[in-house]
Image (cartoon, rainbow, N blue to C red; front, side, top):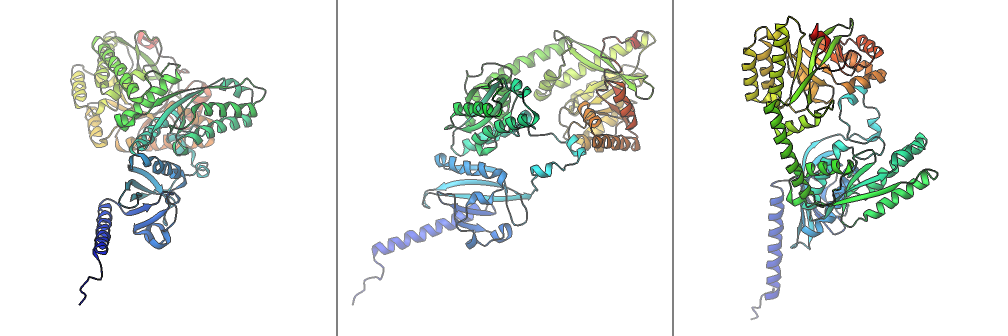
Length: 571
């Protein structure tokens, strides 16, 4: 009797291998769904070979209908190129981790999701992508942006350069850092290049508005087209641009394309010349936050004309930046300790009568003349040493007020408090101690909380503010309208005054919609018992305009420039 198994040894081994492969696949799917909603297996052409998950609910198609579709086609068009680039870059390392993208789903034009990808040799070396849906979010298209109300435009921080259509300086550093980290995580080799286009401003002067627009959008298109994902280029100065790109991009050809385009658009103008500096990303050596700072530092140096090609890596640039920052911190601490700064006082006046209401104390660091100390103070906020300086300013103002009071003269003075300092318990305690030592000081001293540093615990800060207000000290919210956070602050803080940011005032003065916005905000403040101040009041027509809008007070050169000892203090 033949007892030979129907499946021979080789067949049994094959069956066992298939069983092991199936078990491995099930374990892999189970592992994927521990952290995701969908699992895709992609071929070398990025088409879908296998999918698991609730595809009907998310994409409106069953798993069979999903087969053969290109995975990038499931991504919103704004993110499609970067996803495709990441998949290509992952050929080297075999993975990329947690990239936030927008999907085109059945319920939303743009549903926010996190994706991660892994190449699995046991499955024909195919690439597996896990997708976790986070929330739906409507993407604002360029056409929709034209219909955003003017009031919203006044609050939103723009992220695009209007002329070139690329990221502006403020947004590019963060975008570049994110892309550099993503490409590095996928095993790719990205670089940061900065391009200086000589004579750009002169060429534009010789062109019509239409040709100027054509030239700038062409330059933006060339740079974006060579960048990672087709959207990692930015304008970092009047004639300077930057982009993150793959290592195989010919940087010299970018400059040549720009020069050729300029010759076609402006054949009779002085020719453009493009010069480029490229830095290695070495993104794995830095966090994304450190990368963003290194990019910003590099942009600043390049735009100011510094030679930044040596050292030629972002990590070295970061080291240089930190060394320079530490020198600035030490210098700033010496300024605080030695009181090596002066105060000038700028009048804030009644718009209706022109009479002085109070003064604002402004800082002037010795050796810088009339130059604004904004950059140094911003650095001190970022490093966390601003509270010491804010206290030193308050001490100087209190001494000045006491001196004026002894002479039988003086006007109320407002002192700035950084959003960082008002959250610092040590600073708040020291300020309370300072104010205890002077009598009747509350009639002469006011405070303006600036929005230059983010306030996180709004309830706690409001409690702090009320502690001072109970003692009779008035509080103003400075820089209102400069950022969307101002509305949260106005809603959360019980304050006495709101100061409208100067650029917001200028934009409001320029358009009918802007006037309606400012008028409505002034009316809201009036209804809630909050006084209003407008910055940058430079002439009588603007002062009259603000008065018509219902603003109470004005500050600007129309009423007087900052002085060390205004005439009101000398009378």
